[in-house]
Amino acid sequence: MSENSTAVAPAFIEIGEGDDKRRLAYRASDGGAPTIVWLGGFKSDMLGTKAERLSAFAAARGLGFCRFDYSGHGESSGRFEDGTISQWLADSRAVFDAVVRPPAIVVGSSMGGWIALRLIQELRATGRGQDVAGVLLLAPAPDFTARLVEPQLSDDNRRALTEEGFFAVPSDYSPEPTIYTRALIEDGRRNAVMTGLIETGCPIHIIQGMTDPDVPYTHAIELVSHLPAESVVLTLVKDGDHRLSREADLARMERSLEEMISALKDAGALSR
Image (tube, rainbow, N blue to C red; front, side):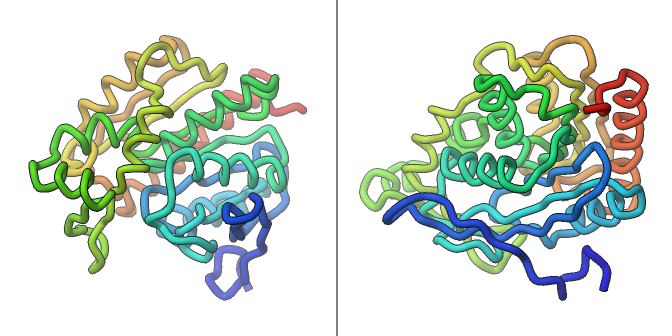
């Protein structure tokens, strides 16, 4: 059975204490450096098209690979409505510490791009910045709660946040509505990254669709302005949407990884 088959059962780790205790599902495979780490998006899971493609990419090249579900997502425990950026960041750090063998290339999609940048900040703060050798961001949505959601709130949305603690909107990706909670929005402000220079200490590639209805391509351009000038590559896909899951998009993702891995090998950054 192939490693990326949905028939392969996930492994689990438990984190947190008391009411905060949760069980996180992950799938990982050993291999050479770098380990590819997948950070999915808001309300997505680790069995999506891009995650499956990355699993096959890593297996074909003998690389390590790790993907997981945030709490309240996919096969992990918890309620989605109880999640915040801080909680999902803690999930990511727990899996990274327990499962991933550095150096890693972190691939973050949509909200996963925000989590990726916060994860690197946390690792750098504890002297482990070199554990991440590179970052690939797909339609990244850092600070989306404050920059993309809050400016669009209607009076009814604001009233619901105040009186009920949440509001719901129809989803283009699921028959169930998307729920935004007051806790998520308030916590998002505390995790903002686009407030100054975002130091990563590693190369960053960004792929962004120009017809993305959820994350405008101008958001990616603004993100670049917060990143160091060196080693940042932005690719704008004129007809690309938010999913970036067409065959051409998946091939573009693979080429970006190939280029990054080759450059890192030439620089000796994968020799740990």
